[in-house]
Length: 221
Image (cartoon, rainbow, N blue to C red; front, side, top):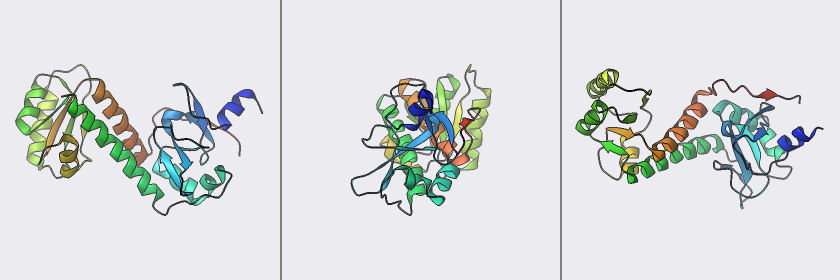
């Protein structure tokens, strides 16, 4: 086994942006940004370590529902820990919920940094001024309101693409932004909004299975 392979196989928490790990489900070597680390919690259950900071031996899985479902089905996730471990029946949905929670936490931080505006009129003004990084519509949003803001978005003068998000419920937006009845919101560009978009794209990739051009390096079983 080469030195490079030993680094990949050993868990150790990643210390640099370019570190890679081996997915136990696909046997592909990927950047840690494309993976989810799992550790064994105090109660003996496998738990997702989204920030990659929890202590103990970790097992890495490509950050998609399909890869995680395969790792659970084939029991390679449990074997990777080299000890007895309990895989909760809801581990797949629990992981997705934690990813979604991380998105909402980032939205809340952006709101505290005054980088989020809510309400149709305020969102409309923000779009007109070209200062929006993301447009959020609650899943319950009426088609006419969504259509009007999307039309304004298409007409807006901006040098960067604006992400349109429609996967969060109004109640989730209410909680994240600390105000009631949020249907439309806009994320203004800034450091905290960058964190939100990074986490949202991770959730989106988990659900869609699309990791973009990073195909990984397949290793033999």
